[in-house]
Image (cartoon, rainbow, N blue to C red; front, side, top):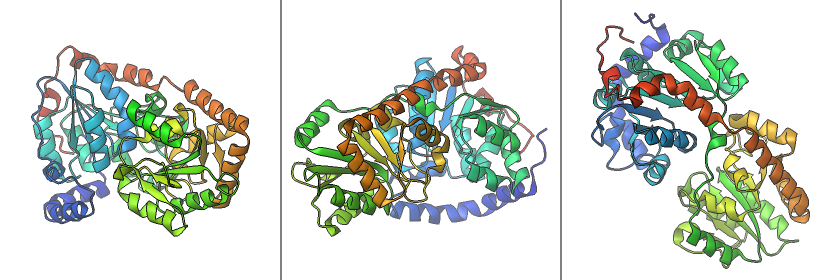
Length: 443
């Protein structure tokens, strides 16, 4: 028998069961109007399947958005290479588009159901997973508890727990312990993550490293690259990637200061959310600059600021820019992952707000593999310094590359830890039997 749930979890399950079916339609309509849902796939958010379940064993891999999807993709590829069917779920429009382009043969994508008992039950009734892998920090209570009640093995992979999240969860120790105790194993990125998960009630924790260090370099379209290289030939290129509202003003301000000494400078801005392209272009116009939108089909032949408001083309940005400012870090968002840019040889600049990747940025900064800037003025000054001293810029890029290379291997360690559950599925023992078991241990 499962241990009784703490009051907060019991109350959450009761409230979402009673009011979820009433509130969900309104919530989904608002999200659809805001462009946060995909028309035609809303039913998936209610747990209704958009595809048939494959025959045989099925591994369910869930990640919140693009970052988690990218981190899990090599793992998904290896599982599919072993002949297993994989269901990948995410919760955002951008991650769904990326899944359509990059999932390997043998893998399906669905939107994860909203965390309401009826929707989660409907989802599990159809898919009947034999193993569930949750990526990083996706701990929706109804989803976890319902899967555990069906005796689906649950493993957290690439687990992370920031100091801020840890502090919040410590105020609800029984609640988080009630969720984490359902996991058969938590595979986490660092010793700090391991200590935090264990302190919050995870019974089995193992450090396997960060899967993002093993993610292959982003794909680059050769024709697109050739066109961009031709259009930017002879120009000084600076890039800002995964920017958030408020940061584009700082980047544009830096451009205006830099062009006094480098009149040929081209600034590329790739907003975290591509739909903000026009908004970013307006920031450039307000500063008296000429922008161009990638989504409009043009090249940066005659512009000051080139807005990469497309999906799945960051590899092109990193390929042509020798230095990259990583967004989400001048505003209190928590920073964005620098590893992909480093793999293309870019020297990294970032702001002070990098809590989501605190260990990575701390190590990079200590070893000289990235440079922290405090604000718009410091950003402009460091970009100018890199432009004036190519050897220093190259040294930062090389140190970043060495750091990333030294921490590879998380994928193999993760696969080794999963072998206990994957080996029987590889032999054909599965086909939804784990999830189909009826149990009286109601979570």
